[in-house]
Amino acid sequence: MLSVKDWNGVREILQQARSKGKKAVWCVVGAGNGGLAMAGHLGYMGFEVQLYNRTDEHLNAVRWYGGIDLEGAVEGFGPVHKATSSIRTALDGADVIMIVTPSTAHLPLAELMAPFLKDGQIVVLNPGRTGGALEFREALRRSGTDQRPVVVEAQTFIYASRMINRHRGHIFRVKNGVPVSALPSHMTPDALGVLNQAFPQFSAGSNVLATSLENIGAIFHPALTLLNAGWIESTQGNFEYYIQGVSPAVAKVLQRVDDERMALAQALGVRTVSAREWLYLSYDSPGNSLCEAIKATTGYAGIKAPSTIQHRYIWEDVPMSLVPMASIGRMLNVPTPSIDLVIDLAQIMNDQDYRSSGRTVQSLGIEGMSVEQIHRLVTDGVV
Image 1 (cartoon, rainbow, N blue to C red):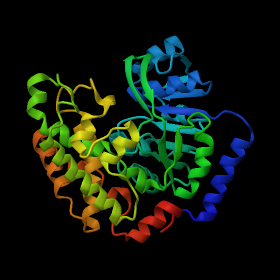
Image 2: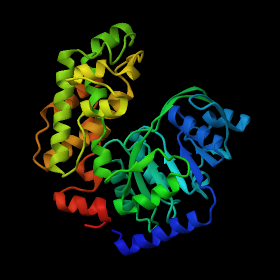
Image 3: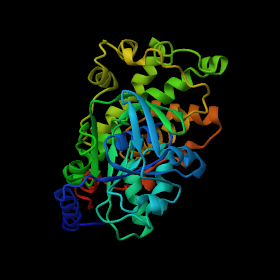
Image 4: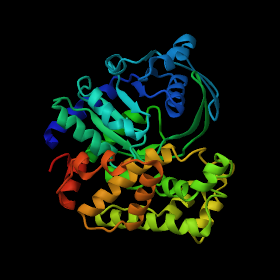
C-alpha cells in the first residue's frame, strides 16, 4: 500500500505536466454509445485522442473517416489521432485514460492494463457504479505492478448520448456537474487540475465511497425493470419506462431500496442525498413522494423501456451496484432486505448467479475492515 509520501511523487508528476502548458492526451476506452461521444467531443475541443476498443472491426469507420461526427448538443467533427485494439498502443503517452464501458468490464480492463500503466496517469471510471475504484485498485495491487496511476471514479456518466453508427454519435446533453473523486481522495484536486482542461463540469466529490453510494441508477433501473417484466416482454418495451412504468406501488419498492442505500451511507459516515432529492437537484423535479418526483421529471418523458429484461439495467446494475451494497451491508450489519429481494428476482428471471459474479467486499479489498480503516484507505491510500 502506498504511503502519503509516495503519493507526493505522483502529485509532482501531475503538477509538472500542468506547468508545461500543454493539452493532455486522452485515451478513451470503449467505442460504444458513451465512448464515441466522449472521443468525438474531446477531438472537437482540440485534444489528442487515442481510442481503444476490444473489437477491432468496430473501429474501421473511425479510422476511415479520421474521427467522429457529432450532432445534438455538440455539432461538429472530432479528429481521432489513433484507433486501436492494442491496449499497449492505446495507453502509450496518454495523460488521462477514460474508461467508458459497462462496469462489468472494469476488472478485466484493470488486469489487462496493469502491465502498461505508468506513474501519474489518471484512470477515470466514468462512471464507477458501486465500488469501481476500489475494485480497480485492488486488481492493480494483486497484479504486483509498482506503477502508481491515479484511479478516479465519477458519480455518473457526463453525457446522455447514443451511437448512430460506428463513426457518428448524438449527444442529447452534457450534464451541468458530475462529482468525481480520486483514490486516495487527497489526490482529487491534482487530478481535477488535468480533467478540468476538457471538462469543467467535473467537481470534487468527498471520496469514492460518496461517488459509489450516489449511484442512483442502482435505485431506479433494476427494480423498475423487474417489476415491469410482464409489460416489457409483452410489448418489447413499447411504453414510457419512467412515466408509465412507475406507479405508486412500484415507487414504494424503489423507495425501500433507496432507504437501504441511505442507511448504508450513514453506517459508512458518508453524506448523500435521497433519490427524490437527487431528482430535484438534477432536474428541478418537484414532488412530495418519489413517485410524484419521477412523473414530474420532464427529462424522462419519451424514454422507452428496455426491449428485454436481458438488459444492462439488470446484467450490469445488479452485480456491479446492488450486490456490492448488499455485501458491504452484511459486513457492517446493515440490513438490506429490499436490495436482496431485487437481486433474488434478477437471478431467477435471468437464470444467473449475480452474487457470485458481482462485486463483494473481497473483490473490493475491504473484507474485515472497520469503518475507520475503510476511511483511511479511501482518504489516504493507507490502512
